[in-house]
Amino acid sequence: MNAVLRAQALGYRPMAEADLDAVLAIEQQAYPFPWTLGNFRDCLASGYRCEVAEQGGELVGYSVLASGAGEGHILNCCVAPVHQGKGIGRQLMQRLMASAKEYGIATLFLEVRPSNRRAIDLYEHLGFESIGLRRGYYPAAQGREDALVLRRKL
Image (cartoon, rainbow, N blue to C red; front, top):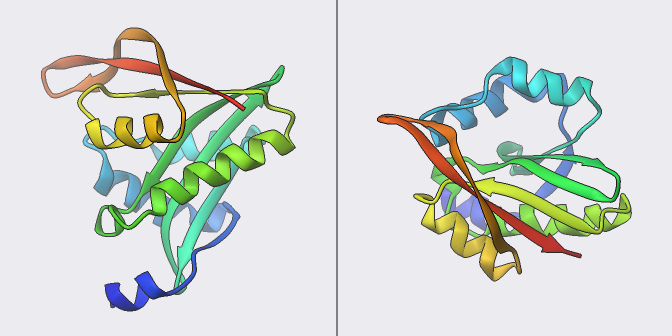
């Protein structure tokens, strides 16, 4: 099945309330400290740009972007663990960057765990640069983990 999915094009559409169970399932598989259903509902209710990626009718990833005053903040960008390493995350990020320009966003920001080297490598390859550190930002098994703050001017 994965070989078939890999050959099928990725489709995108706005996230809907009906997607939240599938989105939450991916979130819980991907992160030891996942967002809650309420977090996703709040993002939808706030009018954030929430989008899902599908392949062969299966939801394989999603993204959440908040914007204001010419700045965008990538709040979440996630690919189902079974589909990671296939370029889907890169496509989601490229799509976020392209749509950000349409929203009048000149600069994108995001936070990432320093322990998430794979994500950091992707973000750096896409032109993001580290501009700071948020101490104790993320919950972790042994207390809290810092977050690197990354920026990409568009």
